Length: 74
Image (cartoon, rainbow, N blue to C red; front, top):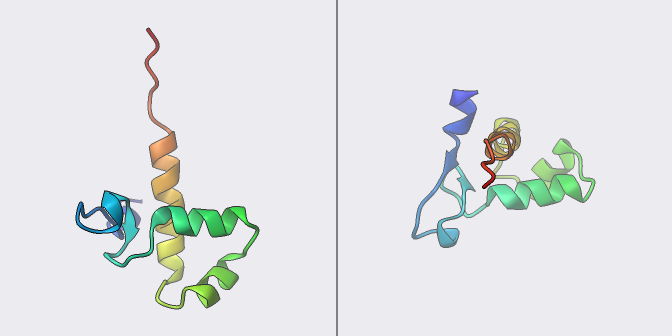
C-alpha cells in the first residue's frame, strides 16, 4: 500500500495543492469522479492515457486512507 501512495503527490504550486497523480495535473478527485460517474478502470485509462492501472489503485487507496481517520467529538 505504501508503494501505491508514493504515486500521489501534493505540490502547493500545482492544482491548488490538491493531491495529484505522479506530479501530473490529474487530481485524485478527477479519478474518483470518473469512477463515481460509472466509468470502469479501462474506460478511465482510455480517457486519461497518461495514467496507469497502478495510478487508479493509488487514487482509491489514498481516498480510503483519508476517509479512515479518527473523528474526535467534543
